[in-house]
Length: 329
Ligand code: AVI
Image (cartoon, rainbow, N blue to C red; front, top):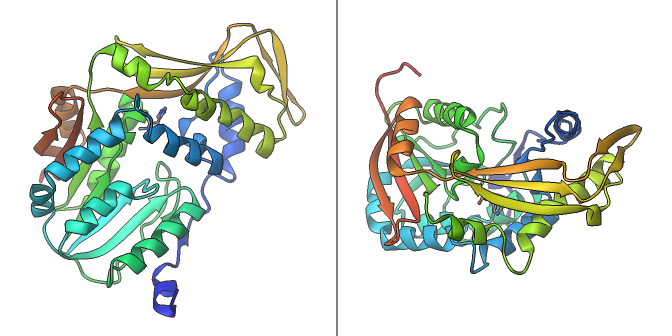
């Protein structure tokens, strides 16, 4: 890496999760219906398992989203325009971003935001060496919390937020609206949001996507307990818990749980947490939308849906939303 690249890749590190992890785990496990925030799945091993999930036959979202992006990339980049500041929430390994960057003629800055400092360092270096002249301004933060975006080093014409992967589905309805409102504020006047949104479909397809034959999703779910053991001095016995995922049609969401297979007591440091047989820890929700529901959610948050691209089966959508001018959010 030359000194120019090193300077460009300097990470704005808000040191996410390190203090909050303990507080949120303890408060979730003390609730009458135990729960843990799904954002904590993504430690190093969890991120690796998630990448494996993304290449499973049963887990259709990534390849469907990528196919939509590729099929409509000319129209997408035309809408994004030139000289935009591109901000990505939860960039991960940037597979989809590269499709954009390969076709965007000119952007002012690319700001990847991710909770994993290692991942950010690696992708920022790869991107600056691959895309000559690309200004990368990485931010390490929990994007659901408070942090300040770095001041852009170059002037740009507008802000476009990129939020792929249907991660919006991992927010409950009210937090989803709040988060989209926050993005609308980040976008500012003339700004836009390019977002991936998973759609409602045959529950059997959904069931298979979250209950894969190889058991990778189960390992991903159980890894959260391993992380708690390691980082919070816990003694969860992984064999005593089972991955359980199902589609809840009333709420239009997949629910992932870890179910206790017996009466047991788990310790986190000095703290004892009793589990009854069959009691569950709710670890993730993944909401599925229809296009009208999402349009309403976007409108409530201050966005107008300008364009929707889907695949033939209408399993997934990529949507381009523009910030509405009325500033009541
Ligand atoms: C990241 N997120 C959109 C994934 C989803 O489908 O809700 C996480 C995931 N959980 C199990 N498999 C994938």
